[in-house]
Image (cartoon, rainbow, N blue to C red):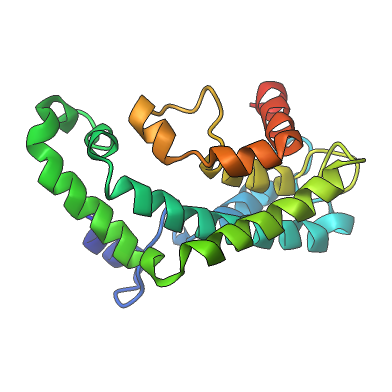
Length: 207
């Protein structure tokens, strides 16, 4: 909320709402996780995360992860806006030392994010249906495969595992107790235990 005007200037997109993550690499501005990952793939070293033969499938799973994130974000924001303790936990340091005195600011920031992503535009039943449909696709794939694409670890696994953090946060995800409650969908997570176990195993193996 505070830095958005600066991001608009830095990205040379004054009329476009900036989102994070955003990477500035010299004169290059990369505006989402997929673009950043592709940049890292091109400039980095090590095992490829975008094998050429699997790129189309990886992009498809990234789209699925984005759908999951969009639906889950709407539900998270709805819960956050009504959870006093989670709002206080969301205040970044060192301002967090002021505690509840900054609750109005926290509410303002949460409302800013909700309006930016139009999280109130979709009914809860629709977001739940979207989440379930995407998770069913992944659960079916992982019923007889270790990875979402091919036989190795790819960006598809990273994107989807991150999205699952808004359904069942990993134990090492730095969240306070109230925030963990806000970010959790216990009923949905209980219906897809294989996906949660898969995500946890990826974190322990690759992080």
